[in-house]
Image (tube, rainbow, N blue to C red):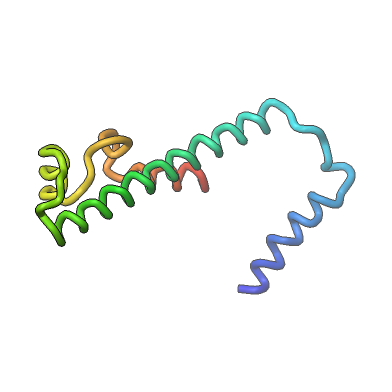
Length: 102
């Protein structure tokens, strides 16, 4: 494992210290930065939506007298969230993560 880390870090060290590879950012760099941020926020928002849904569902399962809307109760009984980013994809958090690291 250590040899792979050294192998990877040597390339990064070379790129950071070599004067020939140090150039200013161009349009492609800014496009990559924007894409990275978009994919990061897709993953983060989906994770937050899933966390909120699961937390509320487990609270409702412990005490069914808690006040939730009929739509939320139907979702709790179904067992998985179908709103927000999850209305477009079954696993938007994994989608964002795969695009982020691809």
